[in-house]
Length: 439
Image (tube, rainbow, N blue to C red; front, side):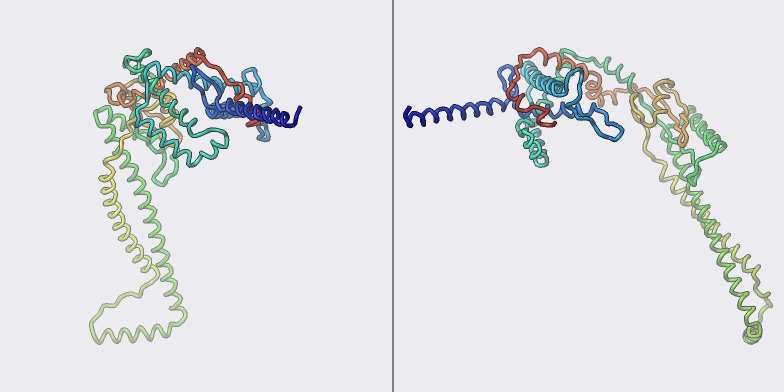
């Protein structure tokens, strides 16, 4: 074989190898096909990451806080690698199923929704784009996934809203609302004195007598929110009185200390120079006699100084008490208008407390009012009818529908995913081996 022929054969062989490698690389840029549509490999990698971290979250750390290697474990009876790939494949199928069902029902996003989604992803990419791209996830792949989630929400609404294939009636939604939510109003009663100290048993008994008075007033027709305002003003006044008493005691103590200090100084002066004091008193008396007539006054003693200090302290206390009373009146007027505690609570929740939720759903009838006791706070709770008007129902209807039927819809998507035409690209699966990527 001539050298020219050898070079030609070698060149053709090299070209074929290059084309083969290029085709292999190109083949791995998509992970699967469904109904002739290719699914980008970037979406496969995104779902692969999600499945991997789902597996990680199922593992428990040992006593030293170390988590075992995922790929040494089994999940649902299969090895970790297989489980992660199976979960990823299912997610890809779900993506395709949603796309195809949206086409079937003629569901398309408005241009404003698409533009908003594009803007969101662009902003996200400014912060996390380099991370995703290093992992092999392009902005276009991420955008497709995001738009698919928007379409899924639209598909759910079409299927379960009025006129849909799986429509839920208002009566069904209202029944669900009534069984799982409740409208309540409450007064939160502190079991502390004005100084913030927890009440003892006698103090708690007195406070609960006050709570019963509020219940009686409500049963006699008084507005619940005004009763809440009344309690708030009462407790604020209790705190103000405690603060005023503390300030009064502090002022009295300061006055007494000052009087005692003055008396001690005078006594010390009298003991150190009695002759000078007598001469000075004589001179002062003579001078005063020349200018005016005066009555003799007894010399000031320690006892008189204490009496004067006590009088001054009493006057200051009276003034302060008057100021406090005026301040309390002003505070009461300002606090008359308070926000209502009227709210809807969930049977599965813990707001305002778990004890209140249990009492409302397991023990109370609509229209009933009762005290729910606590260690530091009591609640005067009234249970109202959440369906008395349609106001709350209309605002919560969409979220109620999702809460009530999303699991059912999720199972429906799984069913569609199992029925669609789907072929995975083994070259992409091999190239993006989860154990190589995350192991």
